[in-house]
Length: 302
Image: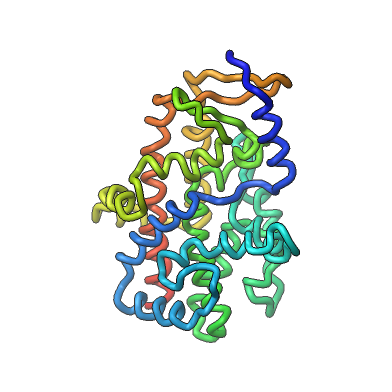
């Protein structure tokens, strides 16, 4: 084992200061999902989605579909260092941290409290998981009686949350904030961060230098057979699927070495063998999210 400066302590301090699980896939991952999902929309769904986004004057992102797929992160973080009103209200909506040892969806979803009658999903309780928020927003999006403003919010949250629930470390925890408090070093590059960030950004960067090239690479997985298979199941099923990938891949350090900092805290050294296991899982997760997002929107605007 090697020793490193207090990287682990800084990672742990950050994880304690900032609530768990954030930034699933980073902007590029969500842009990949948005690009591929938009291409799969039916003409009717695309017309309805475009009409809602055309009326939306929110300046946090550009108004196009792909850019709006990143909006929920921008909204959450828009007051993260000031009033934290948006941050505290929505940050837990991005994940469902099912413990990989003995955890349950029920526990990870705060015992799944129902949305109070008459309360818009965008105003729902802060303690809610991504599974429940997706179900609530999908119900609003499909309801003709939902006011346009709320329907637009529902659309933007759905566009982002489908991506979130497919990131394995947004559906799993190992007493480390979904990997946020687990330090890693990628060898031989010496790139250091935490496991969550590695899955959010580093693996996605390996798919292409920009969203266009990466989308083309991911899109090759979307065969008619895979699209039909991936279009089945519920949001709960998708979360459990992601949790299983976290168990078998993200938290699978078989054959990896560890390192210890000068305070005795352990981290993981991730080598090419780990990446070879992880990259196909991340790639397929993005492809599945794209197919499933398109299906949800096509169903909502039949």
